Image 1 (cartoon, rainbow, N blue to C red):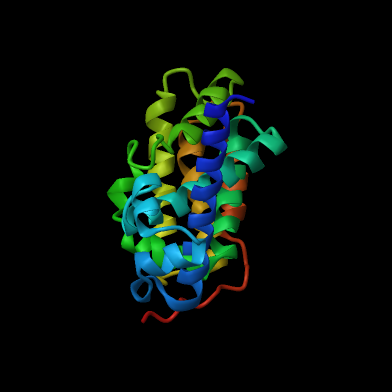
Image 2 (image 1 turned 120 degrees about the vertical axis):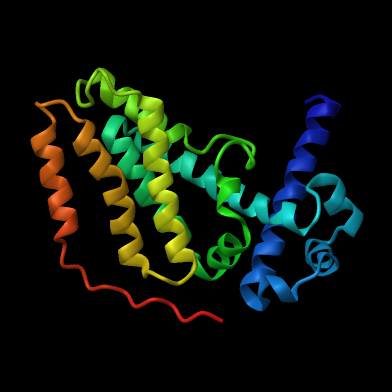
Length: 222
């Protein structure tokens, strides 16, 4: 292995250790009670190393979110879903990632302006997943030929973000978040579906709307 590859591997390892240390401290003490120096001490690096490898506290927060996106990519690759099922699987898996570590992600998400999830502020266009899903669904004959899959994918992503931020702010519980995310996908899909695909999608949408899950109470703020 070349010296450059070794340096890159060491850099990636230190970044991962810093992100893990920050996440652990934020869960235990709250983001507002943790300094960059404390994160550096927990990761056993100098504060300047964090600045050099990642940046300040805000950048470390983005790095924690990016770690969740990597986990989402890995889970989706393992399941190999395509088209409409890819869009639904993406919503389910990401909801499970966030709700499974709610103490961490609720803190982070309410501190990151929603606009930063649009475009490439996180180093990638996160809407690429629903856009790909809609492109595949159109190729499979489930979405009408006259529909722009990119616009539809971005509309679905915007609806998902709305559900995510309601949950992050404590205005909905875990079950409500997942259901709202599924509705954000199925409602525009049913409207844009081909005649052949619309009945099945509409049935799934109505099932989701009428689901009698026990509703989680909103989390108390503060």
